[in-house]
Length: 209
Image 1 (tube, helix red, strand yellow):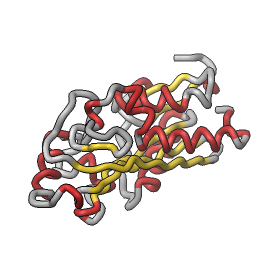
Image 2 (cartoon, one colour):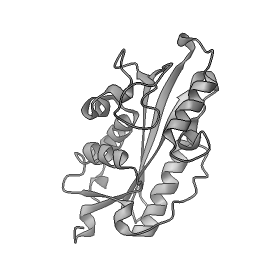
Image 3 (cartoon, helix red, strand yellow):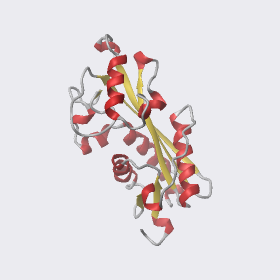
């Protein structure tokens, strides 16, 4: 770990995929900064995500990370919003089937709940909100979406979560899980949220951690 606290941003996630995406994209706006997973700082209990929106939950996690580590912290809250299901699974995406992070069960439940829904009505979007919170209380929030459709069966071995079922509008015929990391990073909801955050950093003095 770097000796200089100004060179470190804590990332409030244990998800290696998210850490790589955040580091790859946000790192361009914060040169010289090392993004360190929460795991590097010890065993911290995940804060209870009591928010009713992605923004509220992202800020809950980022603030908790600052309190636990003392470092500027980035946290993401993201999920899938399906129009035919009135916005579900939404903020409950990671625990849709009851157990947090059970991707297979979540995908199975999603398909079951969309059983009989015709292709044209399976519109959906991934939503991501990324919060950057500083120890001095400054807060920046970026939001992004990725529009698409829900398929009838999973395809692809890349990505995680609902990626095997999600067909982005930007990559016709391919699920998110069939895209290579660089292809996904170029269109993903998290990319757009981080891009928004990068623009805010560039337009302010907050580019210094």
